[in-house]
Length: 185
Image (cartoon, rainbow, N blue to C red; front, side, top):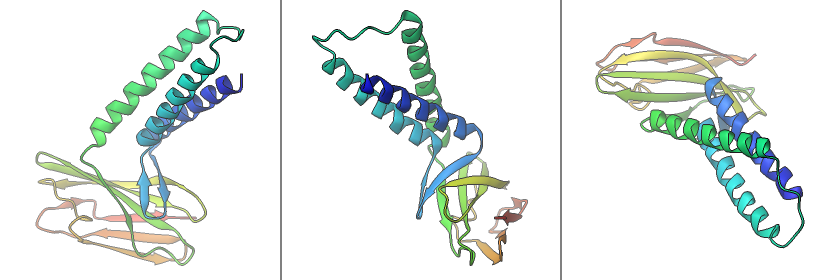
């Protein structure tokens, strides 16, 4: 029975991570960025491992089976989460995430996601608050010709207390908009 509860917890965390994908958040641990779709995938793999252990442990025991409705709900959840995870991974495959230096005196950090496809590029800036792992989106931009200003080193981050500014510099291709406020308050 405990394994079934652990299965439910894994599926719940996978669903929560999938929802976080649509809420514009990422998880930051040190200088590493974990996307919600990757966390969802890890929780789905954990669910599968626990499910296999649970099936093996229940052999020869008289554990009541799950109702058909619960089995159907679980199957739909696993398929939906798997599709969201794979679809998000395909959408995010060429993206590059960076935790920018410097951080504020209070410990706030700017996290950037840059992506390009054919002749266009885009990016997002997230604010990672101190003592937290969740970074929320604070702004976004578009570029021409797939230009990635942060990857090119054409940026500056300035902090004053809990407020910061991210300036993306022109590097041969325009950036719209080039100035972003990072509010950590």
